[in-house]
Image (cartoon, rainbow, N blue to C red; front, top):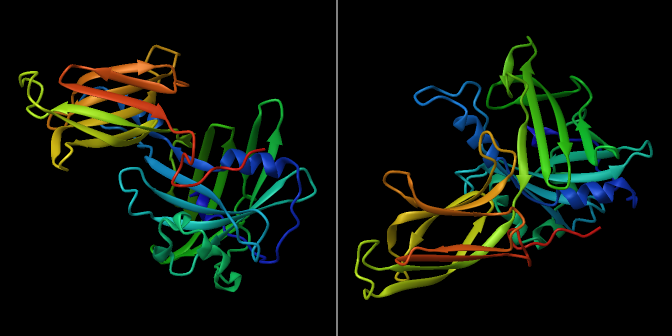
Length: 332
């Protein structure tokens, strides 16, 4: 995938103040393609299988201080959206301007990759990392070019130049990436084939993963301890530790003693079929049936939303400080 792009040289590049600054400012944060996966499933008739299913992924791009590698370095962590505690890849990105109106992205493999999970929470580790320990793959650089008329960056590898030896498959594979980045959208089209030209991974229909930048909300929940049919005088549980993001994050609702309720809370930005207006939907879900008991929606730029069902009440406020895993993206 995008994170396969691994590069050659380890010398620290000079850092310009041009388009690379814009690119890294846009890229910093978290990304998730929940709506794309949801829409693909919603378009299929009940009982029918999705053909060429789009993977549901979650990407984390964090600027880190690692001057021994370069002046603009990111830590990258990628996982299936339902297994964030089991990332399948962690990498380092280094950005530099080529002098040809392009931004070069070089990607490095980490030593003992599994030990770097959630390394963005201990950024001092990167200042102690020896660049000689990093893995490089010549030919896999990603080159980005800004398109002012579309306010976007287009990126890609040189065709068929990225060749790696896959330990999992036991053979060489050829990787081609095409990418698009705006301030709030990241498209990744990864294609891989073996030396015989046989498909290895990537969308067979040439459909990119279309991820959107995550926005976090914090809040509170009050629930009648006896459930939705209990008398109103039954004591309520109150918790003020909700943390959800806007791209399909679902939480198991718990009482203040830590015990699970039968309900989940989900927040998601969606655009329903036959409409063109996106909404931010907050839903209370019965876990056993998977059905929504109630929901509310708001505009996608809302700073606050919630609902009051009497027996269950929720209030959310957009998180503006340290919105993603304890870091703030740099400002232009």
